[in-house]
Length: 142
Image (cartoon, rainbow, N blue to C red; front, top):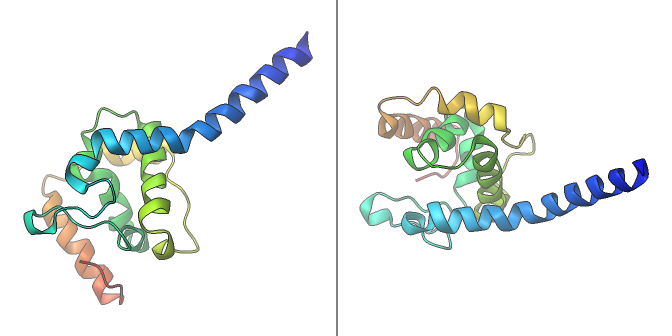
């Protein structure tokens, strides 16, 4: 009996791991694609940045890593901290895999919880500071 419970638990965990990318994609479509478009291209003319070949650069700055969680669409989404962590990791590997630093550690539920609790009042200013910092480091961010 113990073996069958263990087998069922292992099967459930395996199914959850396989379903995570699909769930993250669905969450992206539901909560992000309206502004950032299905392909991550955004609407730069109205202030919605293109995430393609850009998003991974933000991980090269502590402020940039935090910004990806604290941007209003992330911080205010109805997603749980665990779902948001999975979504951010999916977005990075989907829209900007070549720009992810080798030292990348995926977002965790606890990190997302902590960063969501510290959202700065001036997120636009934070983005300008992070972008300027990354440009000084030589990263071609917009």
